[in-house]
Image 1 (cartoon, rainbow, N blue to C red):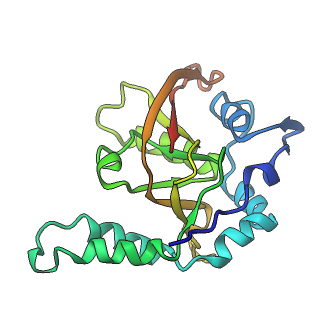
Image 2 (image 1 turned 90 degrees about the horizontal axis):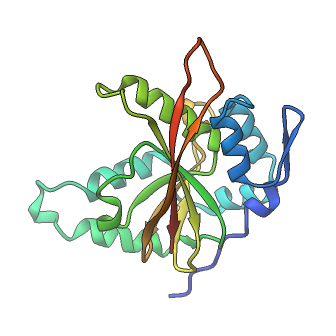
Length: 218
């Protein structure tokens, strides 16, 4: 089966100018958001994406919407229905027939701790919107019972040619529209290569610290 490769989104998105600052790549923009140098604006970044021809190509080919994504994830991870035990794998293979390889050097983001099931299931829901990841990481951290530790955000870089995924086309009339998600359906390896603490500028006389983890996906 021949799977096409998506065009490079990052090379068409950057450099970008935000709040009179120029950012050459997704990483530098993320760091500026984490440090509080610019405001993480999910809607503004989404509008920037929707105005991008390459991102329009990404979402216009896809058959994967938010409803299908949520139900596929739930169905794939169900364990009760032994009668239909083969269905999740069949469904997944059918979806991969319509999927695409992600371009090399593409940067993806994920809020919170990396799911333990990611490497086993070869399933991962990410976003190309750094502001979405930052805001979700901060919100989830505030809701956490054990919020004494840092909020966590993951930067994932595609370094292999066999990463199969789906850009998700979200409903423009709902809050989902700022998620700008990409569902990873298959890959060979997900490797943690580094991590660092990023300290934000003082707000309300307190420092906010985010734990930034770097992953490579091949």
